[in-house]
Length: 336
Image (cartoon, rainbow, N blue to C red; front, side):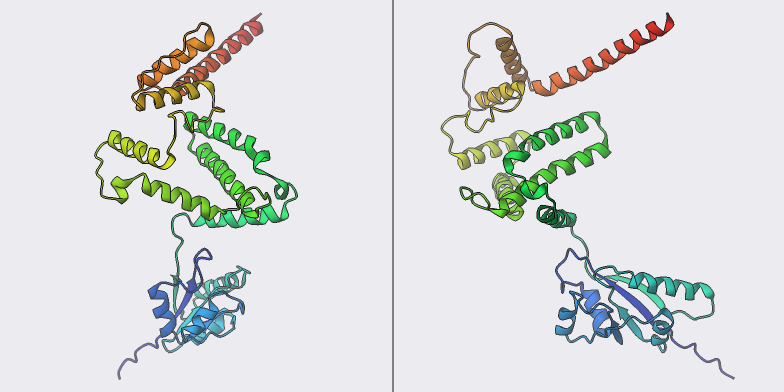
C-alpha cells in the first residue's frame, strides 16, 4: 500500500493597491500573480484598476463568493486573486471574517492566504489626501468657500507663532500638530489661488507652489545637484547667498526684508544683511529705548545670537518667575 499525496489546497491572494497611486501602476510581483492566477475576482464593477487589468489581457470576474465557495475554488492547487473594492464597502471585511471562521473551525483544509500589496505609498503620499480634503472643504464649506488671502493672513501669523512655541516647549506631539496647521495655511492659500477669482492675479495651484520651491532648492544647492563643492556649513551658506543674489537682482541689501516682522528680528535681519554685504553701517545716532534695542540686536547678531530667540527665552523664564511669585503669594495668603 502506498500513501497518497495530499491534494494541493491552492491559495487565495488578496491584492491591495494604494488609492494615492495611479491605477495600473502595479508592482511586478502583482502583475506576475495576476497573469498566473486561475481566477481573478472583483465585486466592484467600477474599480479603477479594471480597465488596466483587462487591457493587459487579464479576465476579471465580477463576483464576491462567500468564504466556503472561495476555498472550494482553490481546490487542486488553483490560485484565486481577489481585488478588494476601491471604496472599502465592507465586502472584503466580510470575506476575510468568513475565511477566519473557516480556518478556526478546523473542519476545512484551508488554502494559503496571502496579502499582496500591488502598490505602495511613497513618502509624502498623505499630502495628496490633504489636497483632496482641502478641495472638498473649499467647495462645500460655507466659511471656507468665501475665504481670501487677505482674510486668512492673520491665521498664518498665529500658526507660525504657535509652531515656534511648540519648538520651544520641546513637545513632539504639539510640534507635529502645529506643523500640520502651518501646512494647512499653505494648502489653503494655494487652493484659493487656484480658483483665480481675482482678475488682477494669475491663478496657480499647489503643484505650482511645490514646483517653485523645488526649482529654487535645486538652484540654490549646486553642491548637491551640480558640480560645485561645499564641505562646511559656511560654504553652503555662501552658495545660498550667491545664488539668491543672482535670482533677485536687488538694488539694496535691504530689499526683501519684511518690515512687518517683530522689531528685534527685523533689526537682526538688517544687521545680518549689512555684515554679509561687507558694509560698515553703524546704527543711527540717537537716544532712548529704541536706539538701545537696535544696538543690542546688532551686537547680538554680530556674536551669532538671535536676539528674538534670546529675548523669548528670557521672557519665558520671566513668566515662570511670575507664576512662582503668584504661587508664593497665594500660599502666604492661605497661611494667614
